[in-house]
Image (cartoon, rainbow, N blue to C red):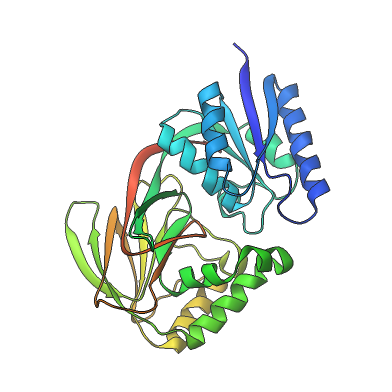
Length: 316
């Protein structure tokens, strides 16, 4: 039986479009020469990748390439997890951050990444799930593969809009982040953690990051938080200190590859976090994000979903 690989790509987003599309074409050709029936599918508009990925899976597909950045991977992930398919997710990194690609050892912007994945094997792994509240009061459910959380870092993502990102890349995030660290009010929320052994802990923090990967990109690419894509749990980073100096010092330590071992910053391994507001009637909501995509506000629940995704990964 012929195996099928589909390359889902955005034909209009990002910089150097002609070069990006050429990478997709050459990658599809590599897999075709390896014996796969291949197809290139262009996304039809913003936010359409999830619906299109679901249709690709329904039509039958062995490997589905998310061609783009972490946003494209995030959209495709939603369809693969929701459908409970065994179709394997592969990544052709063409975006700004490419966190998932970094964790898979893939080079950016080249068909070499597709060639490397011909030697990878499908592994069934856990993903994260975020349930948050939208402004209309509706519940939003989102899966994530890199990290999710809430606090100032999520507001940074919200303010670094897509147009600014396309103009200046990761710089848009850094500008928003440093501005917020100095100016934004640090507002605590309640966090109830469920640990791997079933016990629970109660915390109070103004920043929470639930991590699924071993490394990030950008200025904190050297930080190793102690998690991995193969880990069935989540590494929870809680920031409790209100000292802006400590927050900046912790960030600086992450930048050079250290750990933010500071008073008021904790790393706790858990399978679930329930975050609730401490006070009602707050004018500015505490924003949540999943894989760099802004979702809803408090209350927020973040949990690990075991064996939810098939991902092409290195053999060892």
